[in-house]
Length: 77
Image (cartoon, rainbow, N blue to C red):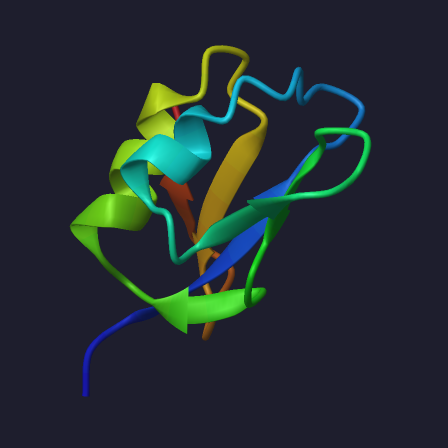
């Protein structure tokens, strides 16, 4: 069984660019205020989710391992 990631969007930072939808259309949705929300807070690890987090222009998306909480993105410095 593969890793699962916990996906969070800091809506106080999100600017509604929809880059997350561009990279992972099945992983995010925008609400009426154009704020991003993960479709599922815990999801199978995958390149699309990572690309969405990396492609967010304001780094509003964080990914952590669902099982232990270790950071996936942004990586620890």
